[in-house]
Each structure stands twice: as structure tokens, then as C-alpha cells.
Length: 174
Image (tube, rainbow, N blue to C red; front, side, top):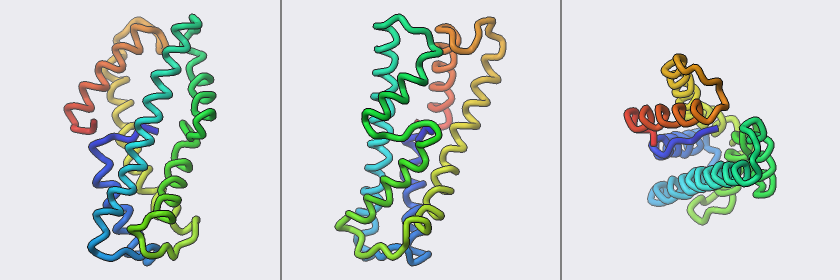
């Protein structure tokens, strides 16, 4: 799951407003911006930790001379060590962190919703944000179809990242 910095603020605002509208949380109007900041912090921290995992996995692969096929296993092990959900576990992890933040925030007067109710509101809004990543991935892949190198090769990975960063910048996602 990829979370784009440029999508954090609008996504968090949608989440908080939906939770308030559904009477799942109670927040004094003056504290709403602080609740936004609380949940934004969860997403920014997730970005920081997952980037750290990515960088560390690359270092391990380079140091041990492993091929790119080992990357997923290394990433999962690093994420497990940090107790962070990635890949298929990412959505549940982020939603859980947001719910825990709401429960512990001094800016939220009361959390009325149960976990499954909060999840019902938060998860689809996070998934909608993730859709940008899926669409971007398809667009990048369509632009590098011409490469003779196979996916997972160093050349393919470098070109993929370069085009992805260009598109992210162009679409103001990052």
C-alpha cells in the first residue's frame, strides 16, 4: 500500500468528517483541526517507517548479494521486526493505528463506535486513496513496456522508479 503525501490531508478530513457525521466520535468543533493532525501523523509515520523498510531491504540485498526475488521476504521480515503491516496487512495496520490514535487522543471527547463500525468508515476511504497507486502503477508499466529487460532487473527497477517519480510529481501526489 502506498500512501501519497499529497493525498493525506484530504483523506484525513474525509475520515474525520465521516466519523463525526455518523456519530462514531465526538469532537469539539475547535479541536477538529487537531484531530486531523493526529490522524495525519499516523499516515506520515507509516510513510516514514515503510520507506525505512524499503531502504534497509535494499541495503541488505546489496550487502548479501541477493537477487531481487528475495526482496519481498526481506521486507516482510523487517516489517515484522518493526511490528508494521505492509502489503496485504497494510490497510488493517493503518486503520488499527488510526483507531488507536482516536481512542488515545486528548482532542477526541468520546469514541462511540466499535472497532468494526470505525473500520467500516475508515477502510474504504483509505482504499480510495490507494487506488491512485494502482492507477499510477498501470500507467508506469504501460510507459516501460518497450524495455527489453524483465521486471525485477536493475534496469527495469531504475526506469520504473524514474517514471513513477516523474508522474507523481506531475500529478502532485508526492
